[in-house]
Length: 397
Image 1: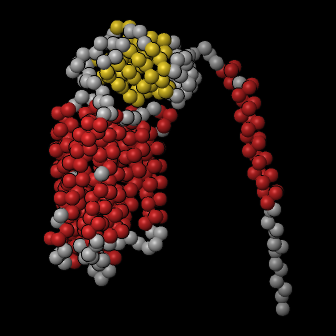
Image 2 (image 1 turned 60 degrees about the vertical axis):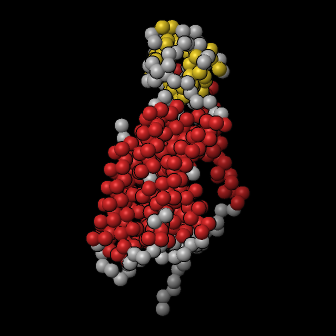
């Protein structure tokens, strides 16, 4: 008979000691930061070169008083605006707030310049180190002012772009109720196809906008992390009380499409604000055709149930109304980094919906072998991508 030797169990660290071991390294870090800030140990490496400077134009406003640009500094040290050129001529300017612009801070430059309607102008900001940062105004038009009449007009455009196409697509619901399992598979695959196109479209658009934002926002990383966080949060919410199906899955699809339509509203609003009124009209018509299939995708999970009538109105508003808010924001208060963030959140939501619709499709075909590669599923998936791709060609310039 052998005796079993048990290792002694270590007592857990008490709460007071744990707090001490947490505060000790934190205190050392703060002391190191304070020493670096006060002693400046890197001063011996200074070779007299000017500090690295970065300046981003975030907004441009044109009105009857001249040109106004919003600048964001991203240099290693505060930046001082020394001179401003407009169309190669030096021009007086007023800065608000005045003085050097700290890293990450913004300032408005007001130029009483007589810009010409429909013409192109170039604003060139020169710092006290001689570094120049140019910005082109491709088409000079007055920046929209948020009046009640303008907001109503933009709301109407947003309804035509987002709400009306989704409602038209959902009107196919009675016709879809008679489909069998094969037709149901095709509809779900069609939904995945159109969502896959939207995911790719939103991701690339978000990355493009992120490239226009100030470097301090770390645009590409912000887009990826925001999309991942959105995906995980919505997955956790969706699985909180089981796997979503039926009406709850339709609401998740509508949410993802609504975030995408918010991005479309941003694009149309920015087109109008930039003076491309004809392009904006072109985008409105293209997006309206482009979005009709989205209503069919929203209806796919509920063709075998009888949801209450109010749910159809709620689905239409959830999927379409964000286009109105996106159009308002795009035309009145546009900034590339926040637009990229909004699109990234939408991309994460779309990815979550693709996962849930795919899981629902597999659950609906438990007895079938390789349901994802059946002709109905492959045909529906390719049809969804193909329709979205062809209609997107209308609005690509």
